[in-house]
Length: 328
Image 1: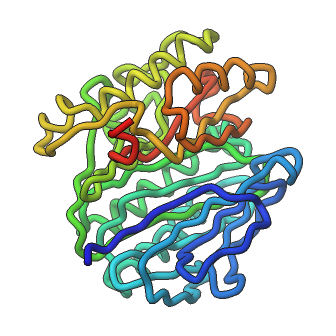
Image 2: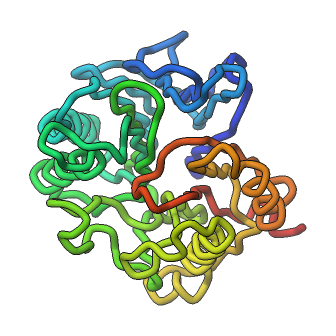
C-alpha cells in the first residue's frame, strides 16, 4: 500500500483520531509545542478571539510514534515525519533560529527522514525592526539560511514554505518530511527563486521553493503579488489577488511542471486546504468574494488576518493541489 499523508481543518476543540500525526491550533495564543494525548500540538496566536480559530490535523496510515527532542516535538510513521518547534520572543532572532533549525535538521538526520517537503513559520512583528534596525523577517531569514547552509546542505534542496506574521509572542514553526516518497521541488518561471533574491531584501535570501510535488500532490508555498522579485500593484487588493492566484495557476500548471521534468498539471479548481492571509480587517468581505470566485466550491478555505512578509503586500495564499476535485 502506498504511504499517504493528509490534512484537514476542524473545529478548534474537536478531538483527534488515532491516525493523527499532528495538530496545529490557529487560535488566540502562541506557545511551545507539546504532546497532548499522544499527538504533537502547536498553538499559534493567529486570531483575536479563540472562537474564530480552527485546528489543522495531519493524518497518516500509522502506526504512529511520538516524542520530543531538544524542545521540539515530533511524530512519525514508517514514511512521514512531523516536527514542531518554538523560538521565544527576542530582540534578535538570527542565532536562535539558526540553533533551533539546526536541532530540527539533526532530528531529521537521526530519524532518517531526509526529505523535508513542507515548512511553515509564524513570526511576530514580522515587518518590525530588531535591535539592530533590521526587519524581523530578514533577521529570521538570516538564521534560517545559515542553518540550511551548515546543517542541511547534504539533503534534497529547499522545501515549499510559508513565512507569515502572528499575533502571538515567539516564532512557531512546523514541517513535514518523508523517507522514500518521490519528491520534486518546483520553481515558478514568473518569479525569481526566493533563494536567489538580491541583497536589497536582506543579508540572506529566504530559504524555500515555490512548491514541492510529492507523488501526485503539490504543496504550494505562500504566494503573493510578486513578479520576478518585486511586489506589484501596491495598495490594490484586487490586482494583488489576481497576480497571486495567477502565480499559483502558473506554478501548478502542466507547462511549468513539464519544463522542470515533472508530469501532469493542476488548475486552481484543484487547490484545497487553502489558507488566505490578509492584512486589513476591512478587506475580508472582498477577499472572501474573490476566493469564492476562484476556488472550487467544495475547497476548504480559512482566512487569517495577519501581517505579511513584505509591508506592501495585502494578501498571501497557500494550498495543496491534487486531483481530488478533477471529476467536477
